[in-house]
Image 1: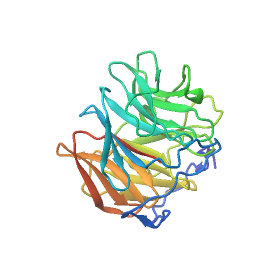
Image 2 (image 1 turned 90 degrees about the vertical axis):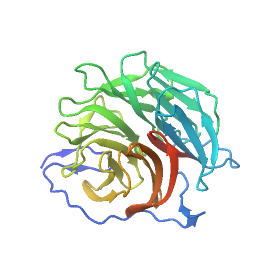
Image 3 (image 1 turned 135 degrees about the vertical axis):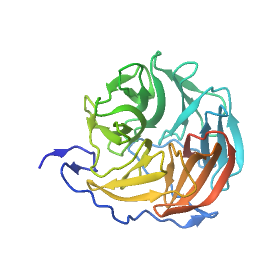
Image 4 (image 1 turned 180 degrees about the horizontal axis):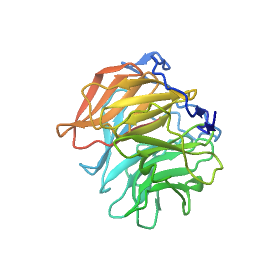
Length: 316
């Protein structure tokens, strides 16, 4: 039986996927929400112990990034001046937040925790539309997903140490095209999801040190449209944007799925211990909802008043 590298989620081709009731990490509730500390990584942290925990929400419809205290969910600040803020990602070492925007030019802009003025930005030099981003906890590399123009299927740009000019890795089209989101695991492997044609979701991996992306979609992944991607310490979470479902993949198979009620068009979610925070927009009503994880079901708390929330992340 042939095998594909899937990081520590090694996948054997031809194995029948079994959906099982999964288990997630559970933590004592803090202020009504279960939260866990950021997992350790190989790069030394550089954090202010007095800094508060913030929940960031990008809203391209409002042209703003909102910052809320977490888990209290009180508005603490707003980043403005970014035309189309889409993807957000957090540096595990510094907890600085990066914001992806594609207009008027493709940029990834860095902010200190709680800051509203950019401290650095990276540019791709025109061409693609960029969506999601992630930083490697092992190397500090910054990865950005792209939709290229014309017949180009798009791919992944990687900035070494989050600096300089990126290296481009094309999506393995025609099997996969238009990548949306990306996540790194603790070993420095990057995973992206994208369209696979006929309303399917495909997953590709850029293994640490590899020269190209490789398709590693687990059999049985039945998503209709690519949603968020997150490494959750013991499993890889892949979202289905349209149906508001999160698939959990570990040990080479889909272990289960989390259905989020009263949600649709869920882009990049954020899993935090036994909670998952999901931006969503149903019937032109933008909301950020918090659910039990992996149980899902009805939301525990809801933030209203958004136009088109796209990504949520937590900076500690």
